[in-house]
Image (cartoon, rainbow, N blue to C red; front, side, top):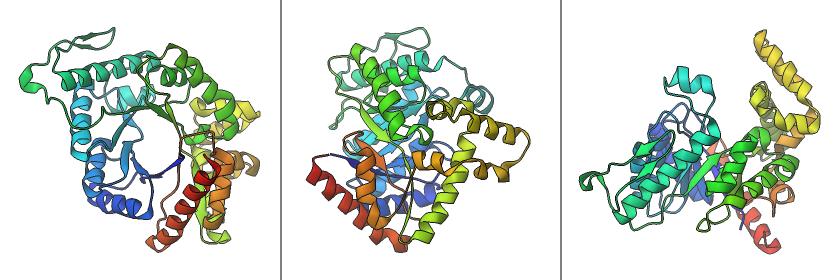
Length: 347
């Protein structure tokens, strides 16, 4: 069954996340993703879980390299226990400059480092669950000491699902191999890119998957320009044009442009950043490109359009929470209609 998740604005802090999560739950979303950017993702998840009783709360995605797997495991275990199994841990690697210069942490090869990170987390969770001695030794991480005093013990909830943010081919294969699911990035959530690049690479990685792991969930973090009328949709569309223009100025996000023959757009955007021509960048993003990476529709049009794009292709989609609570009822109606249509079509 297709799930619909809300996304938290990155500037939303601890003082506001609880009320925001309650709005999301009241509108009928299946879950809420919180970021780890301007504010700490684990703290945001804690507040959101404490304020709600039904929805899942996941971090999309926690910057893993600066944090020890032991610290993350302890926090995730507590969140899972507190919420009765509603927490999901999403992990990402970030770019080297941020890891070394923003966090002053060591840089590891993304796929190799994340493989060990996930392995360490699962080993730690196993020791928590069973109280068996901890013994994980890899090239980059080593965990061989967990005295009974520091072991929180088993919880009355499933193990914490581990999701990965993935863009490149190695990380996509790693999702198939070790993760419970993945988060796409707004720059690679074109349905063509999903079919031709993401799903085949995840499937290839799954050839080496442990027998005890279920098929990884695919969450499409799609940008959605929506509203009650065409004028609002058009304004949202232009807002997201600017966001995508900024994102596509980063070469790491060009593989999806290359699939369509639009690498030159990324190169143009990168040059504009070097010249400080920030205000001109949105105009460099043509409508044909925008249509591939952005859903634009009124609330009443959303169910058909969302299912036409993603039905049967992914397990989850994201839908923007309206800035104005006066639109919550229309959003709730769109979510209910999308879910009903998905059930009707068996998607």
